[in-house]
Image 1 (tube, rainbow, N blue to C red):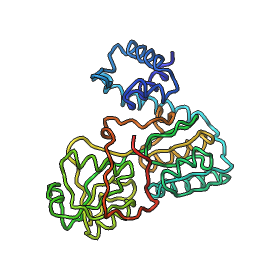
Image 2: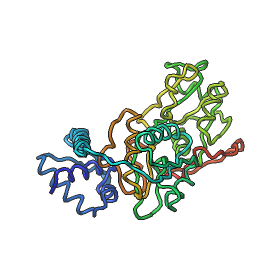
Image 3: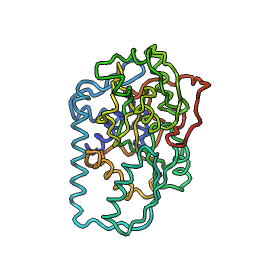
Image 4: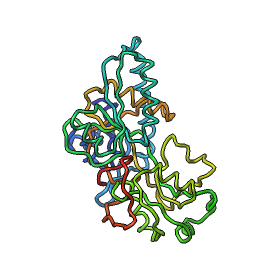
Length: 339
């Protein structure tokens, strides 16, 4: 059996946290995944996974192998691409969608793609997440940049994670610096909350309860960019994902404070049905190039299944609470219910 194939399955199992997840991602049976991993362990002469109760984690050898396996597969894909001496021109039409928070990155990628392939016609739509998912499933869109979620059970639906946006405390620099205790912000300043009906907002709500932080509720909004503007105006502070390509980290008006404990992030990527995969692959690689990550990482473009509530993304879903001060939601960043 090809070692490349074994490594692809290993990467899927490592990121999914179980052989069941890897089976879904790689379109294999769970037994086949187990057989491949036993073959890889025999080839490497090392145990790659350890069971802890009902969950599965990488062994020390597995953690050592994972980045090297990803690097090897990237080099393999790069080699295959370099052997294509005369890459063909791409023509026709492709319909893409994006959340408003990701459209800057996607539009820059599309512009570069158009320069290299003048015959390609691109339609780019900015919509809220639920509509984007529906449009990909129905075929109105070929692909969309969305937040990882529990996807509908649709044959051929593919999901490729591109980048993470970590949850962070964001405050005005007039009330916080790098040494400001987070608890003091909650006790002294108004809190601007991201909509709890979204996946990200629900995570923030669970995080506050886990840390026993009681905010001074002021507003609840669905637009992350509107929340950032209110924080810049020193209306209050927030907990929100640090959006890519918005450079909040270097904004002198903002102070970003890391949350205590294990990092929590939302993953953003591309959802598609594979109809124009030769084009969407170029779009994905262009986005990764803008992010400084090079080629599309092998093993990540997988069948779209339930988003894993894994180690990097927090725990189980909690009940959503309500607030009288909830503001009418815009259509910027609506997400489906969290897994």
